[in-house]
Amino acid sequence: MSNRILTRAQTFRQLEYPLDVQRIQRHTSTVLHSHDFSELVVVLGGRGVHVTPAGQYDIGAGDVFILHEGQDHGYLNTENLELVNILFNMDEMNLPPMDITSLSGYHVLFTLEPKYRRRDRFESRLRLSRENLRLIAGLINHLEAEFLRHDPGWRFAAIAYFMLIVADLSRFYSHVEEPVVQPLLRLGRVIGHLERNYADPTTLDDLARVGCMSRRTLTRVFKHAMGCSPIEYLIRLRVNHAAELLLASGGPQDVANVTEIAFQVGFQDSNYFTRQFRRLIGTNPRDYKIAIAPARRQG
Image (cartoon, rainbow, N blue to C red):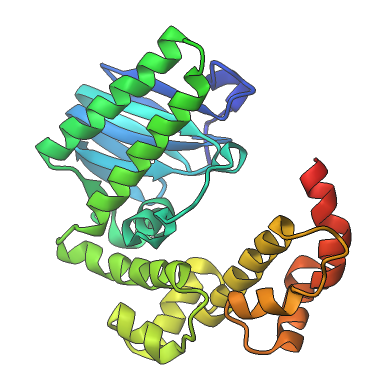
């Protein structure tokens, strides 16, 4: 168990703002602790031992990893350890997902590597080359400057630099060639394929080919990582995109396009679409459009 839980109120400089950055130039040893927020760790120099309930792992310049809420960790045997912690609450930032979710490295960085850290003994973490570390360090400098100067628009700019950092790290992870990372990248490619092609006809065989694994293996590892089968994940993607389209479409009297939206997101049967929408959203698409969508637009 954690000896200490660091809260957002104790740690963030701007409590109402869901992003912060901390540079620690000579990180000392710490006891096991956790946070009520997420943390992106970039090791800029020196060395140390990262301690978790699953084990102890050497870290050094170029190492990058995510610590999610409630994940116990600490540091030992630090030698000139310099790192940057980017503290964030992704849900509150309301970032436009756009095409970042099509990158396999994004899913590995934020979901898969933290999930499989115990199994892989931290060997599948992202390790930046010197050149890529310099690039990320430069973006971190810009992010820090926004927090220090507080020029008009600094909150907007800080979010933008955070997005650039996440985008570059996701790209770097997507092209890692180390064998230990390949199982996670294959699964990440399947998730990215679903995010990118959710509206296209897709079978389990198609996804198995994308991930270079058998149907049985894909179903097993996908459910373990994501909590549902690949096809269920696809259905959820389609329903969520349909809800967004309903939210953005015409006024409450314009209900004729519900079937059109169903086909647009990949459903071939409007009745099946309605059943899945009700199961996942809690109401049928027409009622959602008439009642919930206008209320959200006004809010």
